[in-house]
Length: 221
Image 1 (tube, rainbow, N blue to C red):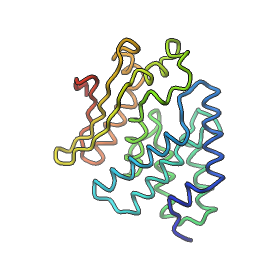
Image 2 (cartoon, rainbow, N blue to C red):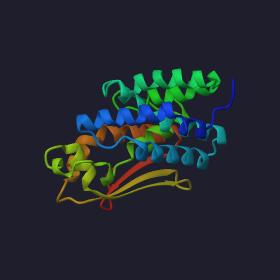
Image 3 (cartoon, helix red, strand yellow):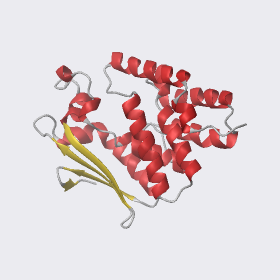
Image 4 (tube, rainbow, N blue to C red):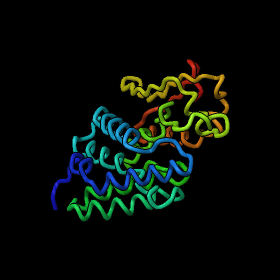
């Protein structure tokens, strides 16, 4: 067994291939971007937050690894992609020689990141959930011609600015959005993302934080 680093994961051609194909499948289905921009943002945020919260460098690195690999289950199917992704990740990491003590929290986090079945069962899972579910941005929309037909595209395209901030002094994690309400009403955002925001609240509570959502300057939760 050996220490597998984030660079080992990021440089793996096998993993890159799976991420590309998983995103290509979602493109065919009409979903927003789930490729390298998304997974790298998630990896950076999840690891940064764990370090700020006092977790070890290795725990932060495992969060980076989990976040980078979290959507590869879309390679199989969008349905149950968290569980299939966890199985794929397990096989890859074991073959790379990662110790089971490191494999376990990574696989658990990947398997628990989806809002329909997930739960912040450990720190890495909680950090991944928060990083993943707060990635709402206009640049994730691939086809602007569909924004008035597809509510997912419309909600993401309406976001002109998104800032996620961890306030350690007051124990608050805030997602602040600026939304163009001529494109998407605030209620449309809640229709699509309420489950995700509630999962963020549970993930924040794992760290004894309060999750706060602000839209156009108003605190909504």
